[in-house]
Each structure stands twice: as C-alpha cells, then as structure tokens.
Length: 377
Image (cartoon, rainbow, N blue to C red; front, top):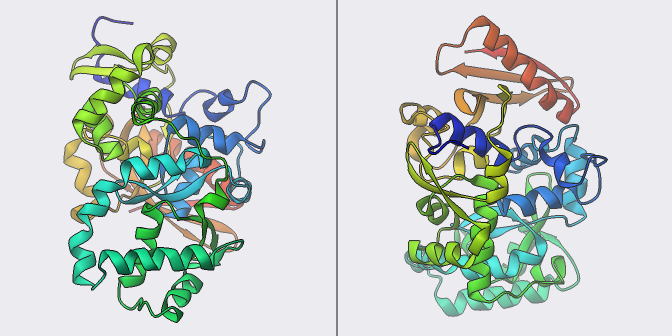
C-alpha cells in the first residue's frame, strides 16, 4: 500500500469493504457458496453490521447487489427464515441487523433517538406511562404470534390507548426501541410485527465495552477506510463512545493515512488492496455506499448531493456508480413484464458509459424476474 491513500484508493477500498466488487457476498461462504445458500443473507448483514432498511424494496436490492445471482423471492425467503431482523436499531431508523445482536444494539443505540423524540411524543399526548403501557399491551398481544401493523394498532385501541394521528407510529417505535418488538415480515405494504425475544431467541449479551468494540470492528471492516466521525454518524453514538470502541477493537483496527487526512480500516482490507476493476454499479437508495458515511465526498461529489437527496428530507434516490463515484440517479416502475427505469445523468456520460449503465441494470431485472427498459431523462 502507498504511504498515503488517494481518493481513488479510498473509494475502491470502500467498494471492496462494502462487498460491491469482485466475488462480493459469495466470498463470505467460500468458493462453492451461492446466493441462495441458507446463511448467505445473514453473512452479508453480519459483515456490514447493519443495513438501513426503512424502504423494503431498496433493502432487498441492497442485499441482492451483494449476492450475484440472487432473486427477490430468494432474499425474501431468507428474511422469512430469520436470517436478519428489521428494527429501529440505530439513529431512530429501521435497519436490518443480525438477530443475535438486535437486543444489545437497540439497548446501546436507541437512548439518543428516544430522547430526541420525547418532545414530539409529548405533543401527541404520549407520556412515559402511556408508552410503557402500550409496550406491555403489544408484548401480551404478540405472544406466540405475529400481527400486521394495523392489527397491532387495533390491539392498542382496544386497550384504551388511542392510536390516531401519529400516536400509533410512535407507540410502535417506542416498543421497538425498548427491545420489545421488531418487524419480522411484510404483508403487502403493511409491516408485520413480532416479539423480539421470539424472533431472536438467542441474544448475545456483550458488555458495553465489548459492544462498542464490535461496532467499531464491523463498521471499519465493512466501510473502511473511514473516520471516527463516520462511525459516530453511522451509529448515532457520541464521538467519545466511538473512540472507546476503536480503542477496544485493538489490532482489528489500524490507522491509515489518506490524502483527505487520517482514517481507520481493518488490516485485512488493507492487505487485500484497492479493487482493480472499473465497473458500473446500481445501488438502490439508502444503500450503505452513500448512507454509511458522515463525509460522502469520496463517492459523491458534494455538488450532486441535492440531486441524490432532493429536499434534504432524508430520502435518497437510487444511483448509478462508475468506479465508485455517483454519476446518475435512477428510479423504477414495475409492469407485468418489465422494470421500466428512468435514469438522470448527473455528469454528462458518454454513449459508451450509458450503454454500460444499461448492461449493469440487467442483473436488477433478473433479480426482479423481468426485463429492463431503460430511458434517460
């Protein structure tokens, strides 16, 4: 490795770390592994530590793009088997996390978002006692069964806890951030909830120091090279906790000099070196490639951020990425036979690169079981 990593080195290393190049997810299970193998989805989620998943369709493709040959039904089946759990584990946002880690991750990282939402809960007339009673009702209602969000809200209403407006939403989040419930499936567009202790019956119970070290190890092996500020943004924890996690991770995390300043990475990632291939990738909105960093400038020109996250309201568009750099956005519309993709060129792509983008979207069509019809806006 060079004495100082260039911006190109950093983003190519991040592609490797994020399982977006080479054999990607297949390397997690050995040379004979396939995308449909039981445990493949669990391996990807465990490697990444957590994957933002408030948008189900985007989360499915975030897994699929890391498991070449995977299909949407196959990914859904893996999640139905419990290879990952969806819950509000960090930053007050839904993530896919390893089932055995869900309880401690929620306990460690939910206090800040819960405190931040306290004022809104008060505006809705939800005091702590009401929220705690709602959690108790949900725990009792969900014992031994799984229910849609609508059915959970009906149970709260029947117990005399009104769910009108946004009250029901905040009661469900409170219960999830208390480690009581989680999302276990989807019924169409409706979330299906279950008890966390039933969805993940074998929770790990690390000490706080061990938990912080685990987060640092997983983040820097899957997102590095990155900074403590990036880790803090990803976890939602304070910088002091993140520094403690890096220190506790010991030799599993090492410093590295880059043209953008000092960063941290896993030694195995640095030993592997930057990915050599130049390719076009098609990550969905909310993918860790963009969302996983406080400073995204290695992958995303700051001048293009408004095009990727218009309005600054936390909604991110799907992107086309050339050699680790965002060059276009895209959105889909499904028909019975095709995925109709409308792409927006952000950098003035050549005819050759547009052709490469079309070819890069074909695996997404296969993932969805349809052909792809691409147009440029």
